[in-house]
Length: 108
Length: 127
Image (cartoon, rainbow over all chains, first blue to last red; front, side, top):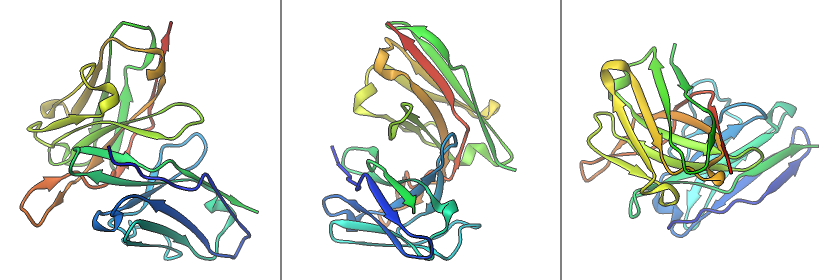
């Protein structure tokens, strides 16, 4: 089955840029989507189709996807961005939806 | 306003069955695929199953294959997850989420991203 890995944690100071990676074989050939989950809440999509933002998500959130790594980039990080972030793909070969292992973003 | 509401969670003994439901409102339910995703407290997200908007296709995760069945009743705007032969490791919050799917270059509609989520229902399996 397709495996997607993320760093367990990323820490960044307010106002700086956070980069959260999502690694998988040839992930650049798939659409990658990103979710934010705050404690006690359901996840919510913050980026879909590698680079598109749902309405209401600030332009500070962006993404890239190439080769074996997709990246969620959060510029001018704010305290409110502190959360768990998950990437997700659809594995068309196995007909399975796959989540990354999740990354806890800490704002110092 | 889009709303998804899960129900049916609870405490059940291992080996028993339980059916959880997901009722949608505020959007054309019959045009959206629906997924179930679970999360053990303090752990990551695990995809469980998906059903196409018209019920024509459905897939489940390898970890629950043969035990869990997904179905839907569009006349009631509801998707179900029947969980049988439950195990302690199935203990989790179960979320449902909608997906508008994506039309591929090959002309297929395939799962895409989980646009709207419910608040989840807790299933606890005891030994």
